[in-house]
Image 1 (cartoon, rainbow, N blue to C red):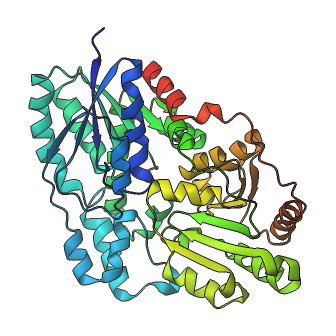
Image 2 (cartoon, one colour):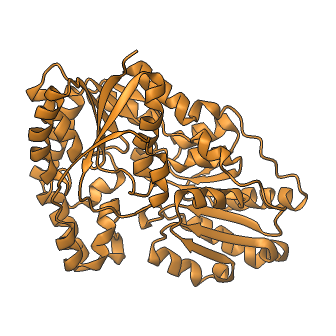
Image 3 (cartoon, helix red, strand yellow):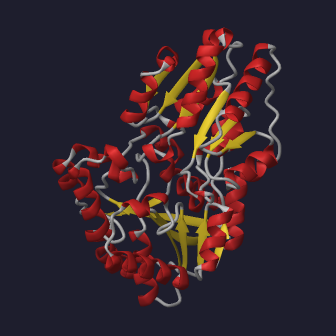
Length: 429
């Protein structure tokens, strides 16, 4: 049976690192099993915040990749101010950490590049792909954002080719994303963002969301929205190293990028108190960071009783990061505190689930993450004001660990395997 072609328009593709690349890399890996032939359209010269060469092993062997040049103003932004490097990953200095250069750069970023600084790739891509889709008999496309300017490519192609089937995949929301309100937008810029978002919602045949709440919000805004979460890849799980000897250290690990907007200050306070109050805990506890931790957060932790308990490994290739999960007793996940972020399900939670370790989560109340943790019995979700309850939970797990009874018994996680999620996608297609 001949496979049906699908063009996936994505900014992030290996060797890009970080969570943004993995969703469509994994879909592309499993789609052929369900009768679809993925073709990737991606920039030739992108400006990635992170590089991870090891993800190349997941790129299907004979996959067709189409590349065209992109112009991005990030080099200019970085010349103006070194910390503008964070922009590429949607991170900002906030509050008192903002210099005038940061303020100016954020204002320019929000008002001059709508929806984002990859907007200069939109017109040339529409021009190139209109011809490419016709010549190659492709009638189904996916646009994956952020960067949300990629959805404008879908919008433009749908106008020119009305019979085109278009799936707009939102890995994160657009105007509902937590940093949107930090962009210092003028009234007219804000209006333009909302108009473009609305046009995408109303024009795309299907809008994909990565969380239940986002799908609900997108439907309210006029989209034909369906939720397919992110997940874990069983083949990554099978490559994991055997669990090492029982450790003499009780390790709490954070894997990934941690920025100021998702900083669990109440956790650092609780850990600081536990180290001061409990000599056994102080003797065995280790706080491990794998990834990029904001300098200012690190500085605060290093100036507390936790300074001798920190292991900071920096950014590691994906496979190594997964190994570090395995050598932890608890895994930390954080979300933005505002209620509008309760629909964010960070991609790494699924790999955390696959590791079988206890998960400590922070974010708004009634978050989708809390729902997943309850369903899988994999850990506990807290607000940013909880402190005593957090302390109690950590101490409880520490005592179980000391007695050798901290078990790994997560439930119902197979629904989140990448293969099962791709099956869901193929049914929607």
